[in-house]
Amino acid sequence: MDFTTLPALLGTRATLEPLSAGHVDELKVAADEGELWRTWYTSIPSPDGMDAEVTRRLALFAAGRMLPWAIRDTVRGVVIGMTTFMNMSPEHRHVEIGSTWLAPSAQRTGINAEAKLLLLRHAFETLDCVAVEFRTHWHNHQSRAAIAALGAKQDGVLRNHQIGQDGTLRDTVVFSIIASEWPTVRLGLTERLARHARPWPG
Image (cartoon, rainbow, N blue to C red):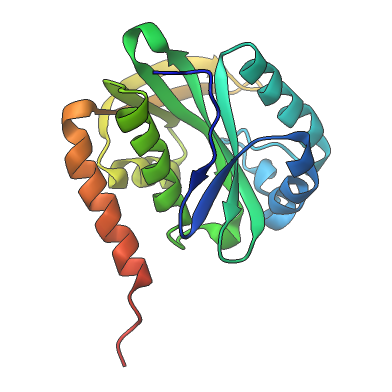
């Protein structure tokens, strides 16, 4: 159970590469697509803020507090987002999957489902986690639906949990998958990926 090693996680649609400064230029292009950072209830870095965000994540990795990845579209060969293991607790065998974002062109393509499958497999099968947590903004209905679709269960809502940079108060919705649920979640994600791979009839 090594919570300090940052491996590459390889899939047919998504490849999770250990985040590095060399990813910054591609991440700027991905973030600029659809101007995702302008969505008020998310914390997606702007192209101008990407250098600082990558530096921040790498500093947390060096401190043993985060495992950060860049997400590459395996088919197109381009970087389309980032994800992390954060709030790691090796003593309690618990991680949170968070600080994740994808360019709009990569959404609803199976990339997110495979990225989550790779992350969850690493958490439960390599790190022997007993629980994996997800958190999102109350108003981020797309994220809440996507997390629930993974098979995660909602644990509760942390009201007035954080104060945003614009001064708004954030209610945080907390989900989790526990180890006993992982086999069913894995089957569900595997089937979703198989459906993406099937050709349309006709």
